[in-house]
Amino acid sequence: MKKILTLAASSLVTLGLCACVLQEDDLDAKYAATLLSPGSEAPEFVLEDLSGKPVSFSGFRGRTVVLVFWASWCPDCRAEAPELKEMYANADPAKVAFVSVSFDRNIETLRQFASENSLPGVQLFDPAGKKDSELCSAYGVKWIPSLYVIDAEGRVALGTVVASKVAEKLKASGLYK
Image (cartoon, rainbow, N blue to C red; front, top):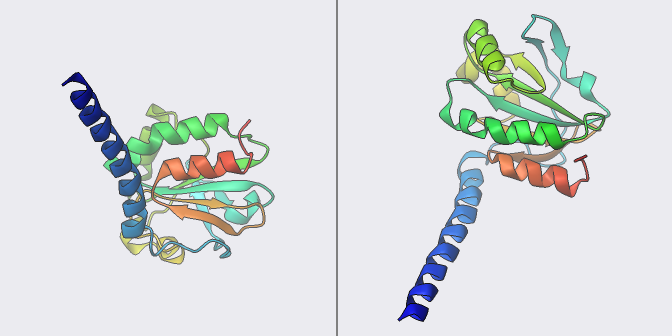
């Protein structure tokens, strides 16, 4: 009887792990279908950082960029913040830049959230918000968080809505310290 229970428990754990993998794949199938394809050139943009200074995306050329589209009001975005912080802490800053584009409508709300949560990397503000953002359209973002890995030449290496896939890509590319 013990063996049957152990086998049953083991099967449930295995099924649960498979469901998690399928769920991640399903998330990309469902929410990342409109993101730019690998090999596509990442569109140029200029947005202001939290101090009001304009930042050009092309200024990051020569390094891999983890580009995150998000908002402080988004529960899924908040849930992925710890994983992004971990990636930032483990990535080689000489080779990887982290750039986040927020669709918050109020820059003060964004500043406060970024400060309280010690958000890493460059924080940019798109005042148009997600619905009206030309940048959102240019990158095919329909869901947040949406994440990209852009190579040093400015081409899309990965587009996903799953942060762990970005970490896997960075690790596979040897971009962790």
